[in-house]
Length: 365
Image (cartoon, rainbow, N blue to C red):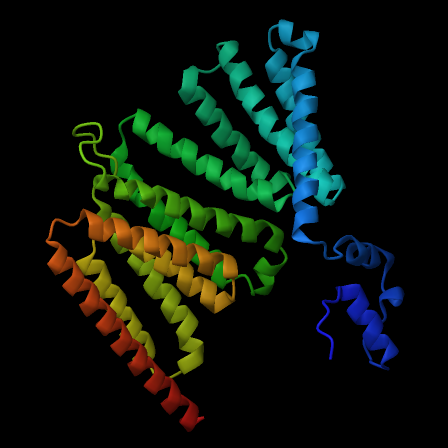
């Protein structure tokens, strides 16, 4: 038997020819036929070349636009930035094509930069703070308006990056540990509830939002690993009270584990209880390393939802946070080795115990 990959349209047509009850692609509504043809699978390098060409062409056009006489007048950057943003937003809602989507994305990014710079040039905003505030409000508005997943994902990242910079500028680092738990909670809720009929209609909005939230949470928690760099900016505290993030994310992780495992094991609460106890022990013993919690959350949700992107994020960042944690703790190399061996032995024991519970549950059913 051949293992060739089939597009959805080809699969429907083959099932029709084999006397299946499935409707033939040619009998589908015209709008759906167009969508099937549009999403014909293309090699990754073709998509990469199309995206590169779109970005290159967009930036060349933008560079040309910057050279026109409009730039010589006051408010030229503002006007051109607004034109680019509005035009890219309208284009994203009218056309759904890889090349056009990338052109609109590049144009919108450039338009936002022009708008922020133009407002600062006209003294309508104050330096960096005003530009960052403008980008935050603009991206909040563009998340529902701009019909592109990549743009929505990037908007979440831009909002979080700008917010972090503003907190540091205003010396409000005490609020930083609160952000990752909130982002983690939003990610878990959106992802684990995406099968509900109410959210399923907005999957094009909720999916990139969830991805942006978990990536942003991981980015915020990278700040908690700065302690591995000695004498960085003297006594400046990058991430105060990391235990606040650890407790908040641990609560989200416990809720996620219970939400995932309860339908599987039903009345048998042993497996969820064991995993929850493991989370609590980890949170207590590594309370200064909140990144371990959020990486584990990405792994749990990724495995539960079969999302390879989240699984990959969890594996990569779990390695990063484990490395920084063991590098940063002030104990001897022998003690670190013993703790790693002990942790591995405990995890193997937990896995064996969970396997036994799964076998018993299968025998009962």
